[in-house]
Image: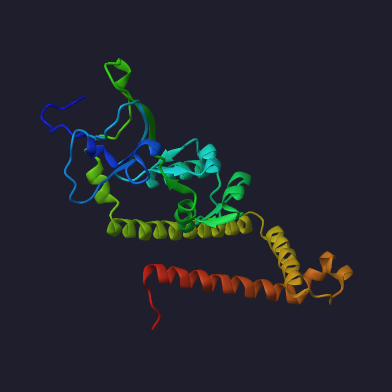
Length: 292
């Protein structure tokens, strides 16, 4: 709805540039183009007049580039099909990409700063895994300047009503929220948001570690003997994988009696002593307690 209290915007205020191409055969290579480009000193106008002498109908092509604020871009055809978005601002494109990632659960469950690309994103980014921080740079390679609006028109002589033509063009109007959004997305606030995102990731990792510790101790509390047997078997497998060791007697090690010897009790005691000391150190650090 038009607000009568506001000053009406002039036609040129919606354009960044305007090019009118007349018949080159009629007006020659040096006189067939008329160009207008916005500058800092541009005076707005409600129309443009182009005068050339002539005694016949003239075909012309009008190219208009709209002045979007913030700038809008055209997406690579593959990305446009994937996001169902042909044009948009950088913020709109990144938001659409995040919605796609969230909908398809592509964020790594362990390393939250990584995106696990599906087959479509792999074809577009040529990578199976990318960092969130690298996403804007990769998207920049897939966006292009918006295409100009092209109007083919014939300038007619005489009183033929066809010499007048009207066209509907979608343009942006002033948004009262835009200024506040620009302030919110200023470089200073963006840096603060990146720091907060980093802290959130640290807290998530800490929560996951505490969750694993809780499950560890609950499993031990529910069945100490079974837990220790499973843990020793797991540690033995991991050790063999790391050292690629071929020593030892596999037949002896698979028997339960092998783990009732004195070394197993000592190993368990050492393990739990180390775990208690580790948790004690973590607790003292969290509470700010320093040993003298």
